[in-house]
Structures are given as C-alpha cells and as structure tokens.
Length: 116
Length: 113
Image (cartoon, rainbow over all chains, first blue to last red; front, side, top):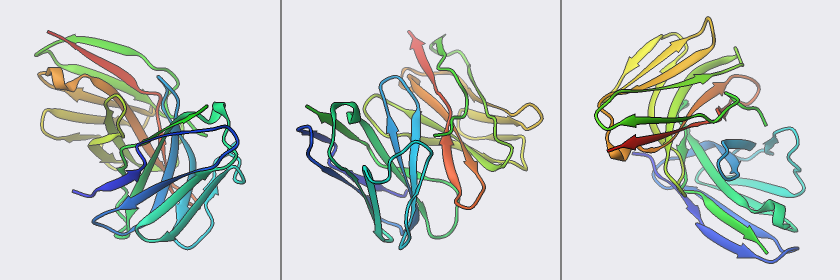
C-alpha cells in the first residue's frame, strides 16, 4: 500500500524558534497534501491543503505566515512552525493523495511537537 | 477549520459483539466518505470508504452505510476484537476549488473482554 513518511516523529523546541516537519510520499507521487493539527482527545483539524508547485490554501483562522507550507515536489511537503509558542504544542499530521486522482488520502505517522 | 460531526462519544462493547459507530456530516458538497481508525500517538489508518452514489459498502468485518437524506454515516464492525479498540473518525471529501478532506469529531471504541 501507499506509504507516507513524516519526520520527525517527536520534537521539542524552545519558544521563539522554528521547527520544520517533513512529509514524504515514498512509493507514489502526491499532487495534493493536507496538513492537520490534533489536540488531545480532539479530532484532526485541517490547517491547509497544498498542491505541488503552487501556494497552499489555508483554512480560516490558520495563520499562513506562522505555518509555512512548501510543496516543492510530487513527493515532499514541509510544514514550518515559525516562532513557536507553547500553544503551538500539538500533534501534526500530514496526508497525501496520489496523482491518479483517487480520493483516498494516506496518512503519515504524525509529529508530536512540544514547545517549552 | 471545518468539522464533520460535533461530538466525541464513547462506545463500550463486549468482545465478540457488533459495534455501530455513527457520524453526522453537514456539507452536501461532497462525493466521498472515509472511515479511519486512529490508535494513540499514531496517524489515521484507512478502514473503508464509500462514494456518494452508493448507500452501502462492505469490507472484511466492516460495513459502511450512507444516508444522504439525513447526512448520516455509520460504521458497523462485526465480532469486535480487542485490537479494534481505538478512536474512529469519519472524513468527508468536500468538492470545491481545492478538494479537501475534513474529519468528524471521532468516537472512542473500547472493547471489554
């Protein structure tokens, strides 16, 4: 099956620093990648949708200057949390759809971000 | 962000019994629905999907029912096993300028021995 690899799985950073999370599709090409944030005991909240080679589409209330998304190739998207604060601590998950246009999305294993 | 389903119920069932997990969605502009299973600290795992032109689809031990009239999805798990304990989410593919996959609130399923 299709595999999406997310890295790192856990990261601890200091307030004010930036953190980059990578999302790679390992055995397929992804035209669309989604980034989600999940707080404890809550659902996945869509942050943004990124398409290869174009700007990401952010959901209402998500600051695009704080959560920088780059989808430079068909196998890699990155999310950078800039000037992180403790309230940014969360579980970040990416997913990807392949170029064939099938609607199914494959998920990474998530990244636990803790800002101290 | 958008949300499909507005509550996080908990469902406890006896091992071997059947489970039914429900989901209400609010957006009519969708063509595809997916059920995911999420274990603690992991990303969602695909279980089964259904297109909006269908009302039922069966997989191995799982069945998804779609009622577009009342905007309702359900996931039936037959003969539940301890490994079925997890949080289950429905997700909706919303058509638009950029198709997006929006998740419901989730249901925690606990299997009692």
